[in-house]
Image (cartoon, rainbow, N blue to C red; front, side):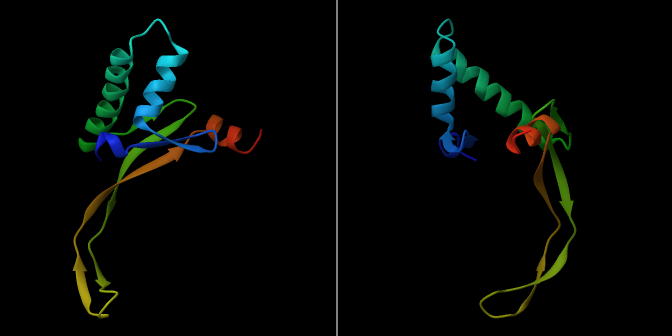
Length: 107
């Protein structure tokens, strides 16, 4: 996913990566924006790299990122109805942590 299209959901509004970086920089005036950008990029890169290697990444209180394997199967072309083979694939999966779930539900 390109950096410019990365979105984060915060307080009911969508936030793109640059807005996240700006918000963190605004709340931490002792940090330069370029350093905040490097920190955010490093975090995303490390999560991506760990998942690419098949590892699980857990952020306590927030949630866990993992990779799930989807078996090969026979699917259907929606236009023609023709049967097509769908190859095995690996897809990202996110499971929310208890603290995040409780906060979303007003607990």
